[in-house]
Image (spheres, rainbow, N blue to C red):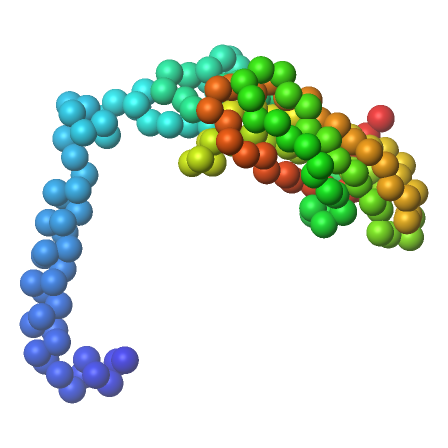
Length: 165
């Protein structure tokens, strides 16, 4: 690339106007601060987290979500579960399934179910914990969550490791 610059002074001449056009484009896209385009009002942006005091902040999509249990030495294990039912109606919902430990020793599982809408905003969350599932064994699990209106699907996050306590 450096040999091209050294041999072609015309490229240097084109780089200056191109940089100016780029800079003008960035200025034009930055918006004004009066909030007319939604960029100046921080409450108009969607967020998946609540406020510092745990309450929902204005403009958020997600309702307040429960904190996840802790798991040590977590490894992804979504292939170890099967999701059997996950209704998406508003209100308290129960997702169910089975988990099979393919490893040779006992392990703990944290199964997180998130109820989401068509744009993947989280509208509810529930957890299932399984402790000391022996290698080769299977067990049923259920995760209960309070689901807001508009959920259309469920997503899973599964970790195996050690749950303290």
